Length: 437
Image (tube, rainbow, N blue to C red; front, side, top):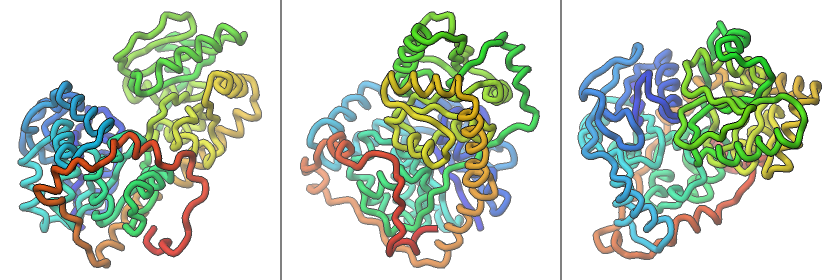
């Protein structure tokens, strides 16, 4: 079997949840199939500026084909189109203009997909909302498999994505909540799919003491790992933790790991370490009392899975359906929706040793049962082998010239706000079960 992983950015030094997800999947499927990667020359997801050389490259043992981005993203134009389609009635033409403004737009990549579609058995497209995935799925038609990495944001309500969700051959969902959300907006339950997520690469030489000595942290701490950004819920985390530190006696610290694009408050119990190596990150998880996840928008938190793999509890923002659902299913995390719940759950993690131990054991078992690499690889291969035996269907075409310009589409924010919320605890096992793997 020959597979192509198609993703917006790719490289050993490219940071980003979906990009790392794609790299892990490509590397592990290469144990079972011929795999190559198709991507752009961009390194930065904000500008899409071409930084890698176009042409063939190798990352690890994989062949990578890079194609140039036609133009960098203009944040002002992208902002205007986002406001138009998210907040106002609009047309399909407006949505396509939004997609063009978001990027990364690479006509050479799409041309390669169209001309060479028959050279591959399947294409795995990562991140539904970007131009490479939208145009790529249409270019290869019956060979397209989608890994949506969707979050609950207004882009999900764009009408142009419905035919993609309904027309690809298969979908690899990150979580039951992501599946429920996409099926509610697109009515695509007949498409073959599975809930799979991704594994992780946990080093064997983890050392908690090494982290404490290197960064001179001797007190117990909870750790946040990721981009320090308003969209990740960091300002609320800072406020909640400062309130907790002032009202609850103890020495618990908050350690922050990741690049920051916002002001970090000065506080004796908040430590910012900035960007660190993978080894330091895993050492930090080993030393931490728990991982805190304040984001309201996730399709799957890889760092939460890593924490569970290492037997560390997770304290998550319960306003994120995915994180709340993962905490409930794993029985390895607590969640909060306001300061009072944050304080109670954090205090329980800090002081209740039997609870902490139970959550730790549950997390390790949950990861091994659902996210170890043999499980992930098997789920991908089962879907792909099923698809080789099934007849493909045609993807719905775009409307014609006049239809594309008819402003009859509701603001997408209203569409997404109307979707069901909450963790997906009741899984559909009805007549469509045969379409799932």
